Length: 258
Image (cartoon, rainbow, N blue to C red; front, side, top):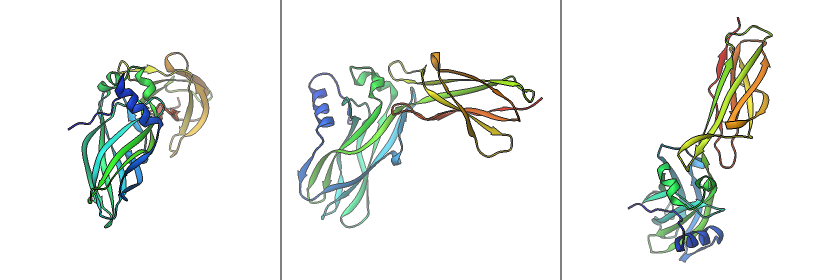
C-alpha cells in the first residue's frame, strides 16, 4: 500500500502544517528513536522525468526489541507541503537485543509534484523534515516529529563551450556556458539567472582543476567570459548550488594550441 505524504488545500493541509511547526514526540513505553539518516547523509536531487528513490534509516531502541516503522512521512519545513511517498514497508536490521536500524524507502515521480500543492511547486524545494511512528515487540510505540532534517533540491544542468579551438598561445579564448535548473511546475529546465559560477582550468596532464574567476549568470542562465591562453588544457564551469538547487560541474572542454 502506498502512503502519500502530500499536503493539500483544506483540512489535510492544516494537519500537515501543525506537524511541520509543532515538533513533538509522544507514545507509550520506553521505545525511542536515537538516530535518523536520510539518503546516506546526502541531499535528495529531483529533476523533471526520472523517478527518485532514497532510504530513511532510523535507529530505534526498546527493552523488548524493535518490531518496525508503522508510519513515515516527510515534507518542507517552511510551508508544510510534501510530494514524496513511503511504500509502507520497512526492513529492520538487529544491532543488539534492544536496538535495530529500520529503513523505509521513499519515492517521488516528478509528474506528481505539481498536483501535490496549491502553490508554486518550486517553493517546496529546500529544508525538509522527517516524522515517524515506530513500534516495539511488546507493543510500545513512539510518534516522533522532526527526527531529521535534510535538503530536497531541484536538479541542475551546466554546459561549457570554449572557442576558438585550437587557439594560439597568448590569444583570447571565449568560454560560454549555461546554467539551468528543473522547474517542477512544467517539468522543463529553465535558465537560472543571477548566480555566481566558477570558471575552472586544468592544464594538460594535470590531475586537478583550479578556479580562475567567478562569473554571474545572465539572461536565461547564460555565462560568457574571455581569458588569455598560456597553455593547452581543459576549461569547465562549477556551480556550488544553493539551499534549493543542486551543485553541478560541467564537462570539461579541452583546448589545444595551434
